[in-house]
Image (cartoon, rainbow, N blue to C red; front, side):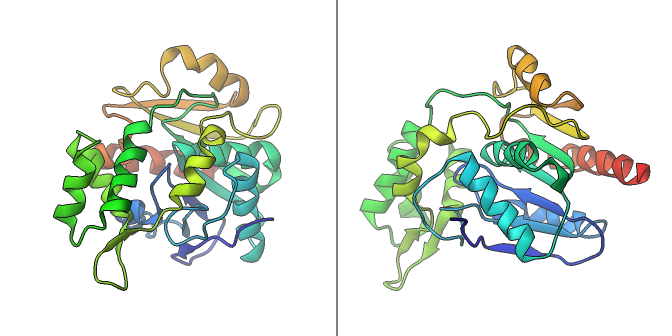
Length: 261
């Protein structure tokens, strides 16, 4: 059964740009981009299940997450949309495109390929568990707890976006950590659906990331044969590391798509 996802909507005319975050992210990660995109497009920023302000439920398969997104489009009366997803969100938008291609005007995928990946989030999940058990009173305490397992300050800063003030005055995590850990194997799997999506597609990859390394390109082009590949001087969080280049690439692609209609 589909989950009723939390979202923000800038309003506007035309097919919207629906933006999906990656694992342990949220719609809030896209605020600076949305401020610019809203001048050109209607933008929907979505919290996927077990993330942000959306409900915590069992199941993290790409079929389930794609159905959540399609149910949101149904609820809003949106027949077709441009879909942009980063990392896990990229696999969700690929899943929607394969399961219901008629609903996708164009596809934008940020630093992920339609492949199964190895399990490499053990330290991050352990750090979040440490925060959960440590019950920090402020962000400095939370950062110290995370640092017991996560060395990189930039990653700890990203993870800290999941902290919210609780009724006791301390900080709690707003992610469904139990559900995410239970569904981790499904998150690392290939997108849902069969066959290729033959619509217009932009794939952005970071040159300092291995998620869309050259050896993954044959699999990518098999499922996304119309993909335009753009490489940015960044790691996996390319939309945060080089926001101007990311924004420009997205704007150029969408301008050309809209110009063809």
